[in-house]
Length: 363
Image (cartoon, rainbow, N blue to C red; front, side):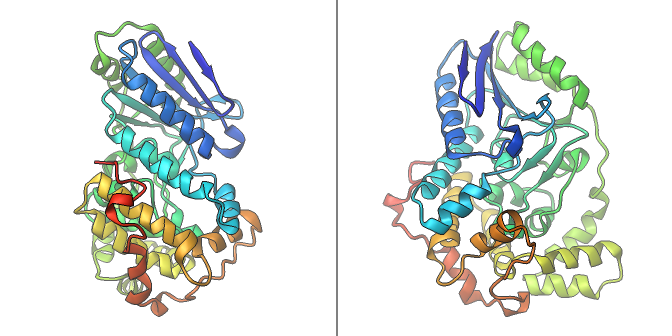
């Protein structure tokens, strides 16, 4: 049985539901249609006794694997945000509901996180019961570069990384590979890229006693991977535990090391306002459950696109990076030092009463 829509391919082979994100020219960036297709398919398989487990992968221009998902479709976000298109609201509400479903899926959900795994790609993989990376994995939550914040549950899963890794990844948007993803709790194991196709085929052709057996079959193929940033854990914890963004940047700029210099320079390029918002997000999320975190992020995204008086940092950030590509965003305020707490607080005020929140149904 194969369900065909252009951008999401889904089929049941043997006892496993197999999903391929099939929008390679856009690095499988998620559109509203793809979010809806994924949600409908996962809901259909959730109660189907013939489906023991679900596996998801991306495709590249040459075929399957090679790129998992680069995030949400930021050109759509820019266009819809600039025009006040209500579909933008639907996109975030439905995407976050999908993220929640994956975290609570009653069957094994196995994510093959090959190649680029960023933003929304993290949202459809971090809730998986088995998160597989390869030597080609490039993982990041780079939203501060476009004046946004690590959403799709990013507050929840980044804040649960060891030490202050979550603050570092959220503020800088730095990219990590397979070994660090495993070390930091954002992946479960590494599968050599050239073995993915054989494992995927075996999932659809072998017989399994139950979903756990299907997952255990894949887990038995996983190998260790070398971490690069893990040795910097003490430095990451030292700087990113400081009380606010100004203190973090000041301390990095006062230090001697190359990593400190590069990290400070990266932070100076990000949206000053959103750096402050993101630090608050990660620290709040550390004590929240997933549903509350997603509701908080849904409030935040409404502020990012619709409720901030004057310029939207997000629309300006996407313009500079992906639309005009001048890489010269006009952030407001311009400097980290110019952001006051009164600018940050509104992002955490919900625009909705609790009973009318678009994600009220999540628990």
